[in-house]
Image 1: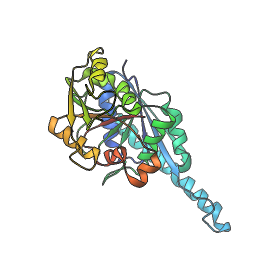
Image 2: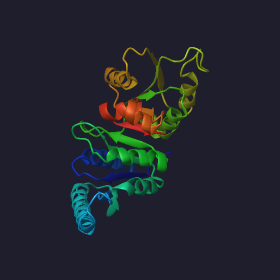
Image 3: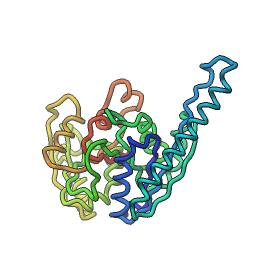
Image 4: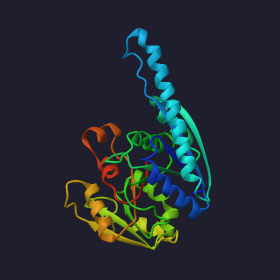
Length: 279
């Protein structure tokens, strides 16, 4: 198993540069095909304008979206044209409310979606929609690339966040090509339940499963010494010198995470290394 089809959706040229760089590096290392969708977004909200102005506002928004798509495609062609990988790019204009549907459709037919970090100083405001559409609509794993740092070829040390959830296990299964390439994989468990099925051997069966795939594992059991799980994971990533994190995405509903916060939401904001997520 490997990643032969890579997808990146570009809605903001500057914000997408780290994701494009990571895609290029991976495609070169894995001999993969890189597909880039340059999306010009029509942000018209019908019903919020005077009746006589609606047609003009609509046309102006469509014209702007077409111009944005063309500029994004030109930017991608210039950027990717410097590489020797196999790649393709196309432009498209879609209503902003239809972005998720388009991303979900294309994500179904790719092995890995690569997306920029959606939050922070250099975040892409549409990246969260892309990530969620790929995870839920496309059922594809997503590699979220932080806005700072250099692209990695293949990870050397990977922290795997394990909480016995279906989302976490799915992310781990989707990350096996990366785990097999790594020199060290650290299965990380935070405050394992005292009465759970793995109470006597936290992470043991997962380590056995991965070992059968040729993955060299260590198990780290951590106490929740900080309020947010994402902060503990980020600190552990720094302490171990890891260059990738694998975790399940959205164990709670997306609405709850958006309103109250959650490990996925916080990680998308604070991650300092690429994060592979699946649901």
